[in-house]
Amino acid sequence: MMMKNIAVVLVVIFIISAHNMVTVVESSAFDCLDACITGCAAQYINNDRLRQRCEVKCSIKCNPGDASQVQENPV
Image (cartoon, rainbow, N blue to C red; front, top):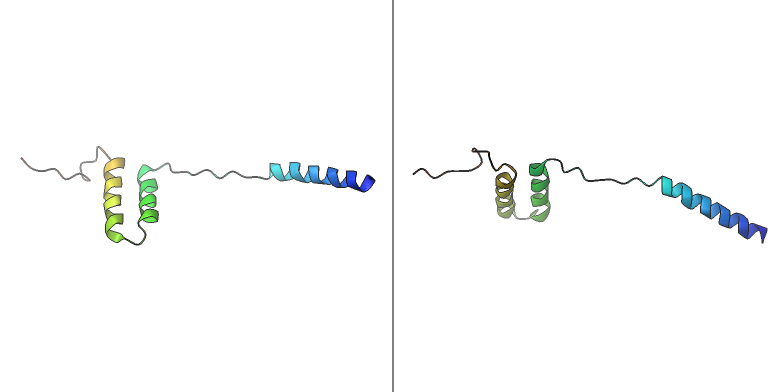
């Protein structure tokens, strides 16, 4: 009976110590363009044409005020 109690205590100590060692990794997609293009690369890894279209959409989405990314039609 004493061995079972010692085993239970050791398991509880192990669980408590293992719980303190868990590290949570958070994604750091602080850059809109980087996060969006990474998603394009993962989604269209085998299709260059669709990946490039996705990257252009990312440029428009993440830089809405940037005139160099948007082509304007002269009137």
